[in-house]
Image 1 (cartoon, one colour):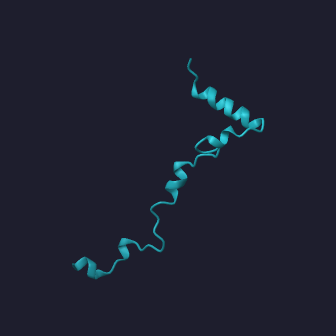
Image 2 (cartoon, helix red, strand yellow):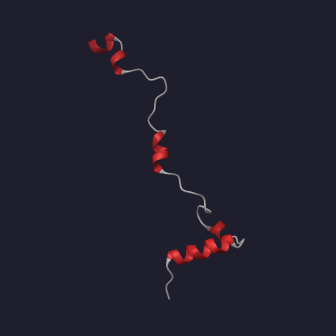
Length: 62
């Protein structure tokens, strides 16, 4: 006998709606996943950065 993962989750969510605690044994405990776009939006920004066009002339000579 085999049971699909969808059937297992349907049983878990029905149990939660009835006041059960099976969902607490899940990895995320029913919490929503974070979108990867949100995490990427904060990455790679440098505060108070200066444009490469505004660098000192000494840098050009070296």
